[in-house]
Image (cartoon, rainbow, N blue to C red; front, side):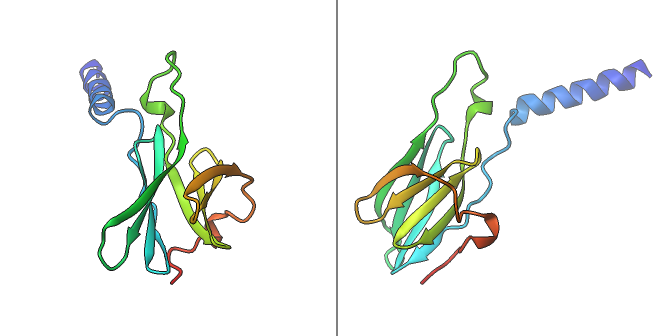
Length: 130
């Protein structure tokens, strides 16, 4: 019985070592408007929106949406916050992160700023708007 318990504990611990404590980024569906596809990218500590020309598949621009300050007293991998949702609305791209914060990316000025999350529910997400 003790042997089984030891093997089980070892298996659980080695899985945490191999895969880390944080699951990988979940896929975020890109959104498209006027021949430009907007997608989420980043490492969880600095997150970007990338604009890609739909016909040439080349990057047109990218903008940093937010940065996550790392607290040295906490494990690094649990501090990452990824973009969770993209939504086009009223000539802007709205971004929601895993922590529930929202940002507005001005597509003309190519700037991002924090905003209230009204209208960013999961159900109203539009993966493609051509």
